[in-house]
Structures are given as structure tokens and as C-alpha cells.
Image 1 (cartoon, rainbow, N blue to C red):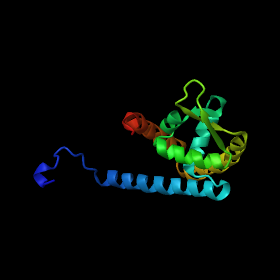
Image 2: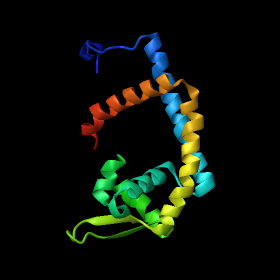
Image 3: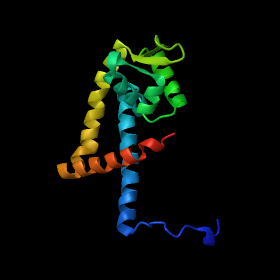
Length: 160
């Protein structure tokens, strides 16, 4: 692209916006890395696996169709299939054909998996509290939630 082809309506970030953006990127990266390390070291679970277990635990009968699970955790179907296969090998999740539709596959959280999740939840929630919630005021945390909910809502339809 030549300079004459460059868009002229780009809303460049000012210094303060650039500083906040870079703080956000760095903060999210180190936060998610630390939460992942905590789960891996104490429970042999990754953040992605933990999120899947949470979604399954909240579902009716602790089971969700694989396609719905992939959409719920905002991962590709192939990534979720790979992750579920690992959890299945460890007896945490089981897969079966949908009774109403022979084409679909459902993932279900086993009793053992629910026990694993119950233990991991303490580690995860403690980490979220210590690494994020306590780093600002309640108003700061509420503002962060409002901004991220707006981002999620506005971008949700453009995934995959």
C-alpha cells in the first residue's frame, strides 16, 4: 500500500490512549498467563480447559453440544474438539452422540470432572480476586466490567 492509498480517517490514539491500550494489553497477557500457570501447576488444567468445565457445569445435565460449547467459549470447533479429547482421556469429560440428532456430539462433565472443577475453582477465583479485583477500587472494577461488556457485545457477532 502506498501512502496515497492510506486511509485518511484513521482515529490515531493520543499518548494517553496509547498508554492505556498498552497497559491493557500487557495486563491482560500477564493476568491470563498467571491464572493459567496457577491452574496448570495445582490442577493440571489450562485456562481453556477450566473455562470449558465451567460452561459444562452450568449447563443442564452438565452437557452441551460440541458446536454450542465452541461458540460459548469463543474457540474454534477444532480447538474445542482437541481440548475435549484431552479431558476425556483423563475421565473429566465424556462425549456421546446426541439422542435427538445422530449427527451431533455432546460433551458431558463427569462426576470426577465436577470434583476436579470444584477444586480448581478455588484456585481460579482466588487468583482473579488477588491479581485483578484488589488492584483498583470497586468503581474501577465496575468501569472495567462495563467497558469489556460493551466490547464483547459489539464484537460478538463478528467471531469466526
